[in-house]
Image (cartoon, rainbow, N blue to C red; front, side, top):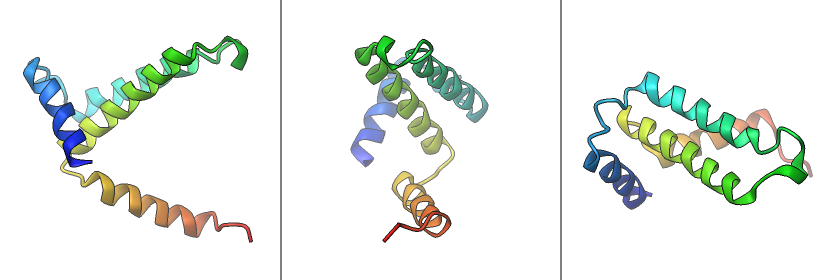
Length: 94
């Protein structure tokens, strides 16, 4: 995960985008990209462009990783914490 985060941040920094990547802007970008993902399903699943779905999912993940990094979060740790919390809230069916 660390190598992927470093690659994303290098891509951003090489383009001088870090000055715009404030948490507020990244949160907005996540929502915008999620809306573009949802647009694929606007008229039902048969109309989705699967290649575009992949690209929009990647955009959402990239922005989320950048935001987590900039806020100083350990991405693996916060995901594991949330999964543990969800496991209590939504126990597995036996």
